[in-house]
Length: 97
Image (cartoon, rainbow, N blue to C red; front, side):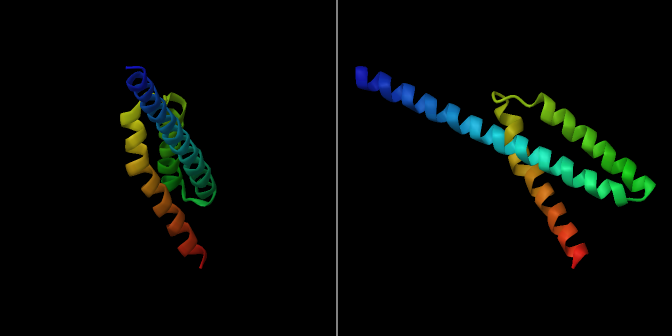
């Protein structure tokens, strides 16, 4: 009985650790994406600049309101926002070359 309880506690701890890691990865990528868009915004045309700044505001809202327990939105960020951020990075690298 004691071993079963210990195993359950360990599995719960592993889940919490993974949630924390995913939260930190999501948050770090949001911050990096904000920074990238801020740099792009400085050189953008006025119309494009407004769109970029709107995106930055959305990202700041997500960053400020993201909670470790919000597993669904963290997964959404990991699955959708991070690839979007990576694609924008590649686009910027291609422009430089």
